[in-house]
Length: 224
Image (cartoon, rainbow, N blue to C red; front, side):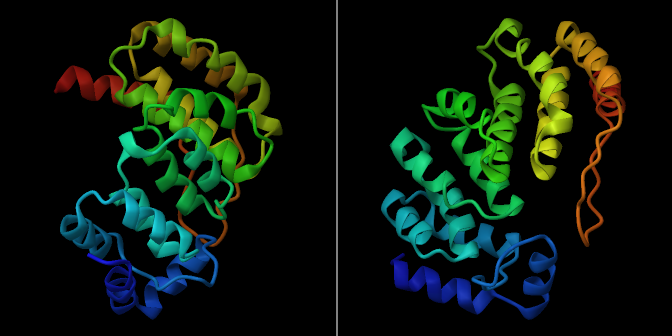
């Protein structure tokens, strides 16, 4: 699929209703309003196409950038390109899609370690969510790798930017559900942190209580 064909398809899939919904979630005006179901349909057609993904990202269109994260090749995406893309993040929606993709790349850990230190809301969010993805999906990392992030979250979370706080909570949860040893440390940190206030705007989104979520995940594992 060519860039022109992909953009035409995105435009045809967009709806006014989706644009209203995405606007409530902080997405800017440069969008078509394409549902994730339609984005997945396009992804199945395109499969993996790094050159097209880079063109899509360069369009500055929200839907095209989401599609870029779904069709780019993680192994063909260098750290330099990730750093360029992270500078374009302008909503939590694209930050979330980007973080999931970034976590699959060879430079995931080095980028994550850098982004979690950023004072910028969307970059910080992408970094902490990338950590959450790594904690959930990386089997070859010891507990010792994740343990230092718990006091880091505890120390910084209340002073972090709004949506970054939410991502830090997600990272805390993801670390806590890796295993029993980290579970107890994450729960202890969650208790000391207390309630996390996050403004989700005109949406029904909520920030989950970390301890409750971790314990529910543990119960599901036992019953599976």
